[in-house]
Length: 268
Image (cartoon, rainbow, N blue to C red; front, side, top):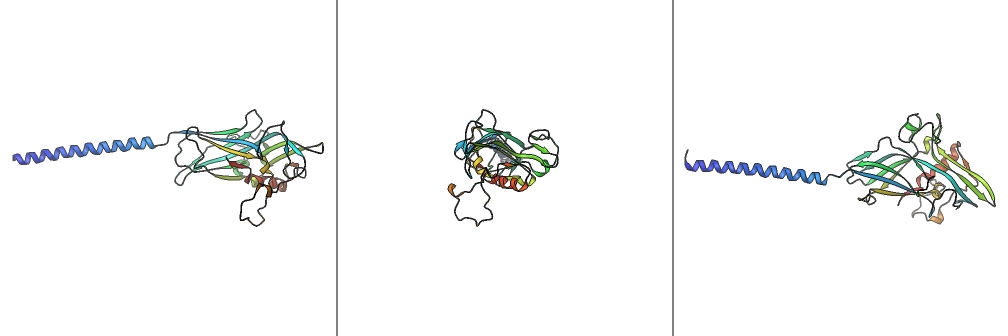
């Protein structure tokens, strides 16, 4: 072999080593970039703030105007189920397991919250959950999440759970009337969808929601012509608590209140 051939072979060997080194370096850089861009696990907190209209909700001590008639009401107990929480994007979906949560507003805190631990969140721009308990779970005796067939929120084996419990007193002309709203039945289960693209704060992962008890009593006008412009607050019609003060097992009355599920939780 000539000297020229040896030089050519040496150059090719060096080039192969250089290419191999460059390729490995590129792969290493790509791996590092992928790791750095991978979303770190993060707790996502759904925080629910109860209101009556624009007024913060307080148990027992605060009176509120009957939204559909005369008198004022106070509340001594308010609970509801939130279930089947889903975070989604165009390419990914995260379904919380055993997703049945009982929100209670009978303590000293101004809110109640649900914490979904260690979610790898990337580009999730939609959130959905149900108000109440889905028909499959509502018809079973399973213990899952906050579902407990022996709890106060359980009606009976045939009916299932109360999705919402609201109890208090309406005072009209110095006369007091007990208020009882126990809302259930499979037909009342309502799924809500929210755009959260700009709502999650990276530093704490909190999404804030407003629960407006006034909007719970909003009348269903779905049979009317769809308005060309959003309804103004003064144009919304409400149920008169005095005329519908006790709602439990009547399907029609339950439906009238459950229609408000579509309106009474909004993202803040």
